[in-house]
Image (tube, rainbow, N blue to C red; front, side):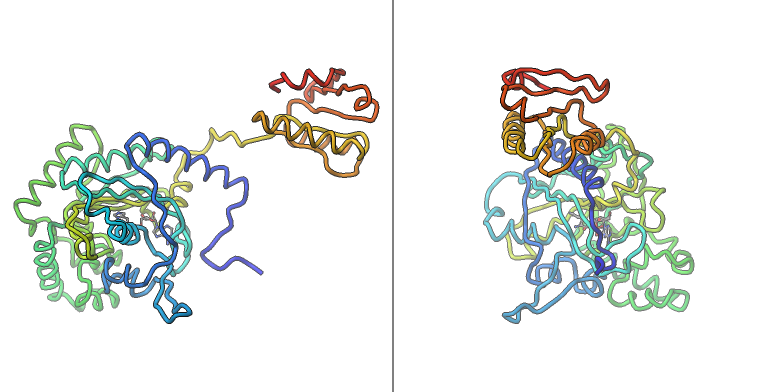
Length: 410
Ligand code: HAM
């Protein structure tokens, strides 16, 4: 049997890298005042169809959908924002004053065609902030994104920004883009011809040369209202003064319906076709659209697999045992095990022999584990209340009273 296509096992060696990345992220998120939220991996399908948009590809083509035993339509979560908004409203958090900052880390599911950097089960670290409409909140969120990339040793990224305006603007933009592109319908690829009616904005980020040529002159920002322009300008000015490098991308539209105003993506040249490390933006109307009070919001998510691909390697110390406890005969195993437990209780990583096998084999294992010292118990040592301490590097060994182990830091 094999893992399903587009899913993968994370074996211990790689898991150590994941743990390091997660620990670094949690420390950074603490510094910015974010708190973790964990939502279920399955949700009523409507949570996603109502928020991401009925025409969004994630909904039409990529959602893992099934009927549960009660006949409900259930989906594996394809992303985190909709679930967090659902939880935010369900627990009445939209009724409390102030700003809430959440983060989540976990698997997401999209039935896409697997390729390099694109999986069916992948992992995201996401953040969502509720309750602030300030453009400086956008800036702080972007600073957090950049800080994460720095602490993860990801270089050569490009931050792309655009503004999609408010709901009213979006409606206007949609009509204008549709009208402009309709004039060149026959030059669009088949997918984009279908998108003209349902999802014309997506044509702007189609990679087909024909579609790119047709949409080249379109800048959605031209249709954005004065207020939204002001908001975006403040964001750009603050980023400049903070020396956060960015590019304005008039074709950045994002694939989900809920975005308003600032939208962004971080791409990395070394990743190939799937070059987005992460993306996000404002979604000021989503909480209300999902049945909550008005709450402006902004967030982003990064793909952990892609971060690991883009990361400069090195610097990881894999956790290892410090000491190995060997036995001359199997009869000493209970004593050895008791000492292993005592050392572990003191926070010293210890391995212990549990098998009936020659001391030589045990020493080979100790060498392989890379421990500095081995402790050896034989029948004579146990009777005399001593232990042999062997320095693995030099091979030197000496007998010590058992009490010396109590203080030894290894
Ligand atoms: P998204 O752009 O759909 O946004 O996904 C964010 C990131 O998840 C992508 O940039 C990519 O790194 C990773 N990703 C997406 N699909 C796959 C895949 N099939 N295989 C591997 N990695 C993938 C969202 O999901 C929004 N919820 C982000 C957000 C949060 N917006 C506001 N708040």
